[in-house]
Image 1 (cartoon, one colour):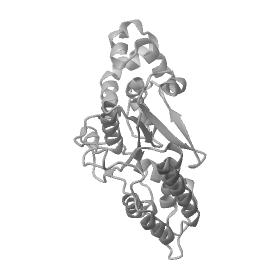
Image 2 (cartoon, helix red, strand yellow; image 1 turned 135 degrees about the horizontal axis):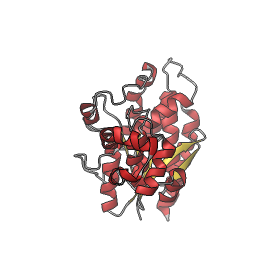
Image 3 (cartoon, one colour; image 1 turned 120 degrees about the horizontal axis):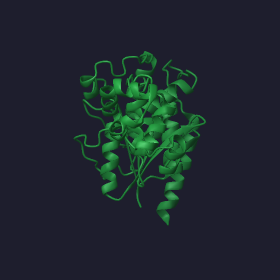
Image 4 (cartoon, rainbow, N blue to C red; image 1 turned 90 degrees about the vertical axis):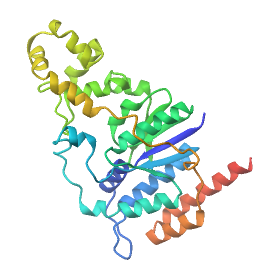
Length: 296
């Protein structure tokens, strides 16, 4: 089965920026996030050996979730300008690798990734989503997996159905229900006031979904019953906010996503400009590996 890797650009860039020291080129250009992203990209090409690859970035504009809920992500602290200043160079790097970028107004990268993964499933292609955002675990199926960086960018953790079950005691499809009950402070999703993760998981293990919880509310007693009763509307609304959209109006172009379809000399020149000398050696190893594969 062929393999597609989808990269959550914003999640990886933010992770790289905070994980690496603020090193600069001789011209004084800060490039730590660019370096981390590039290192991760080379790891994917070398270790995952995808047939196809694509990247998605969040658009600066607000999404449909902000239209539904004005305070969505309102508690997030804005990242430093030094991070945002590196995005043009990161996008230039992606384009130099001839990797398509998918982004669309009104939606988050998660929605784009989920939509592309579903389209790939219909083509009988395995999809690996590289991200630091565990909200994407709801997308895991027998053909879609989530990869998260581990130990910097040297290793990855692969989430399949069993690993999601081991982490939460719930199936991937129950993750939006979990967020609906317990909320999500990072996205400022309210959830049901007073219902924490442990209680939410216990309820969903018994009743399967928020719908099941409220269909059986009469058999839930005590303070939990009262909290659920008072927070019903917020519970369903929060689940809606936490659910990744799978029908964003864009189309996966597998021909454009074909991996290894790039000009080695152009990338090497860009690496030299960025002073990524150690990555040039890894690029050489990668191109040699690809060349050997093409010989057999």
